[in-house]
Length: 293
Image (tube, rainbow, N blue to C red; front, side, top):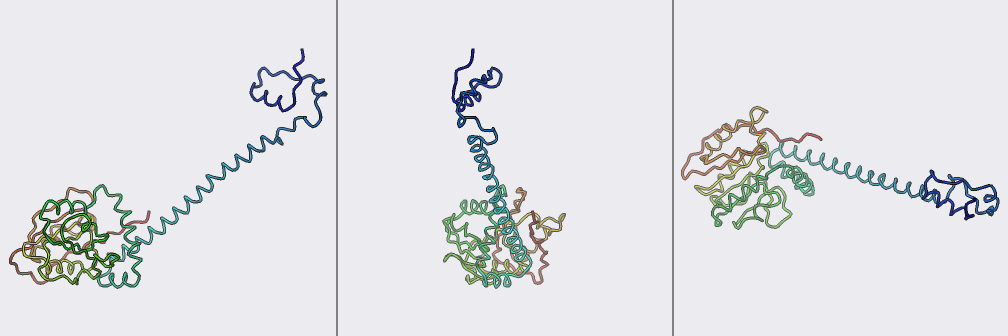
């Protein structure tokens, strides 16, 4: 019994759905009855297959465009990272005055630096500035604070205290732009001086001397520093020698918090009456330079 005569397209449709196992080959009379224009074209020239092939090409092109964008983003990130590393090295290997003049000539570089800084800090499990903010909140809200190297003025934005935010560049009216060794603050005018990862210049002792000048007697000096800079095993300074130098400046060490694997916190208190030792032997702090990834 011959199969019913159908248009060729219908035959193709049934063959696709039914699979090859139970197919029945049409007789020669059926093939002759079909009009010439309805004859099945070669599989390679099928419009449906050509459409599917074109669609597949378009789909294949999308990942290529996506990969291109991803590559551009990676290149941009690499360039930004390289620029940050250059600026970071500059800050660690020049004096505060040189850094101030450098960023004064092109303040936009400071934004580039802080963008890279924030990206680096995002990998830290705990932020030292948050620890300092918590410490301030647990003490007297009437204290006046000087935040040396304030960055984005995070301390000022998160405490009720009056805060003098100090840094090399100011893009906010509340931030004082200056060399941290020479601030416009009055002598004995603040209760707390903060250095959160900001003892970066080669003349960092001058920053601490300035903090001593503006602090009231019994005022607090809070320092957060990268652990590697104070690790003699990796070329850093001896933390005890670092503390001793600050004590000779006229402070007493109240406590040291070294439980964090990324940074160390020091809490000093200015003595009521003290004589600053001349020719203090300040240890050299190892620059914190980031390796190229």
